Length: 249
Image (cartoon, rainbow, N blue to C red):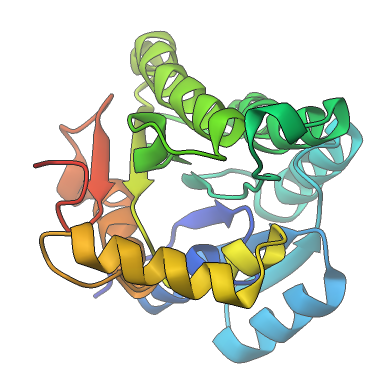
């Protein structure tokens, strides 16, 4: 018997990294999972990798029209959402003086606007017992050079988790945030960091993390499963750090 037997889950950004690992684990635990992302080919590849009970749906969280289409699709085909992992995010890192208005808008639209309206569009499909998980970052509580806009959006999402907890608790919907630290995914390369810089960042991070290593996508998926499942039935409003102790000591 799985922890999510019979549940309908939506995982945004589910074609790679933490989203893919979480979607895979949710399916293993009995859920039917709709994964979203911008790239249809990547979504189809992820669906083939996971196998049964996963459904790819191309949707850009920065587009309200795409989110409307996602909500319509899920409502018509599944009738409800039991678990929402608002995982999709991104950004264009750079020093303060080099960040353009386009860079700023891309990061805010993808992270803050996209997360906010993902919840707004899908929450009408949720009922008592539902679980919403927002993907933040330990950078929401730490200052790092080159990540000013990204970090600000992640801090805003942490605040959003608090506000939505207050707003949705009367409906029996739990809202929590999951804050990864340095996780071994392809995100840094996708946001434009060169390979040499990526390796430097990883090595520097490993030297600062109490557990002396970076985490894996699967090590984010398992805490996400906890927050999604009835194991966390009395847990709401928190930000659960998954960072090997990096931001904790």
